[in-house]
Image 1 (cartoon, rainbow, N blue to C red):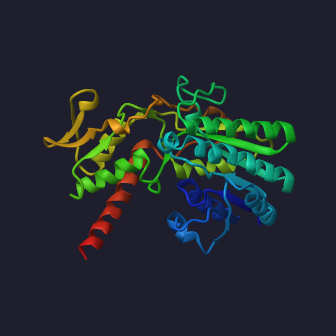
Image 2 (cartoon, helix red, strand yellow; image 1 turned 90 degrees about the vertical axis):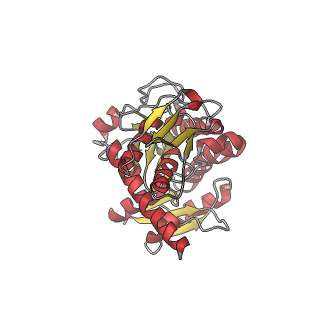
Image 3 (tube, rainbow, N blue to C red; image 1 turned 135 degrees about the vertical axis):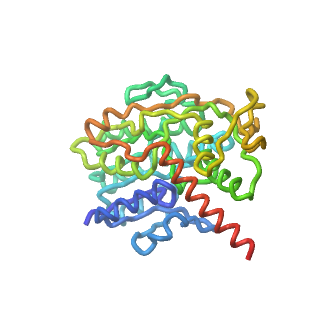
Amino acid sequence: MKKALITGITGQDGSYLAEFLLKKGYEVHGLVRRVSVDTLGRINHLKDKIILHHADLMDQFSITKVIKEVQPEEVYHLGAMSFVGTSWRQPVLTGEITGMGVGRILEAIRYENPKVRFYQASSSEMFGAAPAPQHEETKFHPRSPYGVAKVYAHHMVVNYRESFNLFACSGILFNHESERRGLEFVTRKISHAVARIKLGAQEVLELGNLYAKRDWGHAEDYVKAMWLMLQQEKPDDFVIATGETHSVKEFVDEAFKVVGMPLTWEGEGVHEVGKFQGKVVVRINPKYIRPAEVDHLCGDYSKAKKILKWEPAIKFSQLVERMVSADLENVRKELAYHRH
């Protein structure tokens, strides 16, 4: 039985990856931070099937200890300060965790278990302002402290692979969402608000830049690509994407269609509003507009298609439908609970 260690196991990707690896017959270990509030919501259904260890990406000793104790064949590093917006408020901490954290894990692997196969969750945010479509050879031009930290981590993986012959890969994943996405992310903010508006619990959805374009896939598809990278003969880096791009506004339109509320749009710039039956249900709030915006991300995943034989299965419309339907159910439960 193969052993895998997942950092960030309590996150969206970590929970889907844990499920995927358990189905493949792995013994799954997860690295979690000791916190006073329960953060195990996404993996509650797996608690009896996985083994959790306490460590912190800012603490070299705790990471090394877990790698030494578990002796995994595969390490999937998904843990990070993963919200771009927060990285502007805490840029130094983002660098420490998202950037330097990778160096700490690579050092632990190098000294304790150099035969480990290592996966790093790189990000399309590293491309930032680079022209689309972006592929493995596209020059990085990050537009946030998060993107900058991910570039550092990405180059560390390349350096340890070339310098110490570690089996270390990076998956440059474009935006991947799901019904398990955190509420601070724009896609989940939209699906949750649309459900609340439909059920009469909220009146208006406020957003920032409606015209930012992203390449959105489903996390369930993307964790399979992570695993495939570690099954290859040679370590390499791969862009994982859908090759399709949709604006935030398109996501909003699609989400309202799911609940039978097609929108009409009026106005320009910050005064643009989305209406349903003459009532404003979407408007722009300038406080959600970032200091530097990434306008257009679209991934070219042809290398992954050729070498990993990987392709996304879940389409954009299916992704939105799944997220909104899940949130309708969540909000109905919340409202019923508060009524009683």
